[in-house]
Amino acid sequence: MSHGVKVLGVLGAGQMGGGIAQIAATSGIQVKVFDAFPGAIEKCKGVHKKSLGKFVEKGKLAQSDMDAAVARISFTDKLEGLTGCDWIVEAVVEDVKVKKDLFTKLAAMYPDPNVVLASNTSSISITDIATACGSTSGRVVGMHFFNPVPLMQLVEVIPAIQTLPAVVERTVALASAMGKTPLKANDRAGFISNRVLMPMINEAFYAWMEGVAEPQAIDGIMKLGCNFPMGPLTLADFIGLDTCVNIMNVLAEGLNNDRYRACPLLKQLVTAGRMGVKSGRGVYEYPAK
Ligand code: NAD
Image (tube, rainbow, N blue to C red; front, side):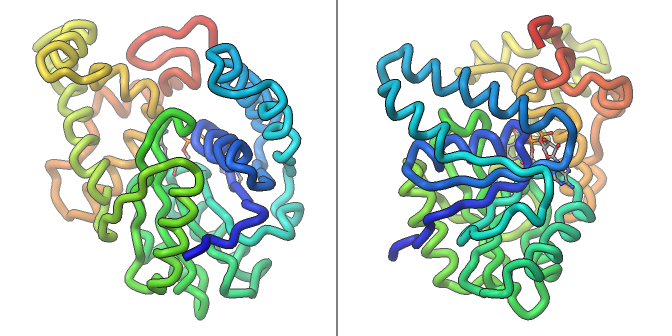
């Protein structure tokens, strides 16, 4: 089945939205990105130049293809500016209220049920998000990319209870056209990826908090002992510690089990503004940011 996407709308110009916009553009799709927060759009443009520039340096992308990809991406700081899209991927903050509010507005802006409304949520119920679209909830689907989007192969495809089978098929087709490998998971909190990954990251924070080992040792042990490309605390810094807390909250509530409560130290770092790589400091320091 063809995905039928000519213009992709992306909500959120952060780590994930920016990455999704980039790979869509390098796949030949026109992209419109919306972000409401001051500075987010300029930052995203800079990230695109840097990331695509690295592909050019490594000989994996021609300079002309980079220029064409950059030219395919436009930005708006108003939701009303996101017109003319035939598929939307939402990648704003991991907050169910914010997401549902945006999906209600999108459903009104795009009454045509053929316009698919996808969410890149890491953990929030797609069924719940879909309810925000009323009678056209069948076009809502989970399209979960991984960070950094240009490098990570997987897209977890999550149908809500309401999602129409044809929408799932089109999502698989679109992810494949973007050069990714789509794999399906059902709509339970955290799906597969974060249900398995996030409790391990949370446990690493507990181990640090309890003084079992210092962060470098925790990461080194998991890297060398389990052959992970990076340790769980480093990975948390890349994901964003705020996002980790939000995902743990969703797991705790969605799976109705206290063992998924976020570690107090992880929450405290977020309270102190230490979000990870994106804020310049999380578990570790990133002075260049
Ligand atoms: P981020 O903080 O880097 O970016 C979020 C962006 O959304 C910011 O630019 C912010 O300005 C914008 N935003 C927030 N509220 C908005 C609103 N109401 N309207 C418009 N823009 C708004 O976060 P991220 O890491 O890109 O995560 C985004 C989503 O992707 C979350 O749902 C997250 O769970 C999911 N996700 C994250 C990762 C990861 O590793 N970081 C991986 C997969 C999925």
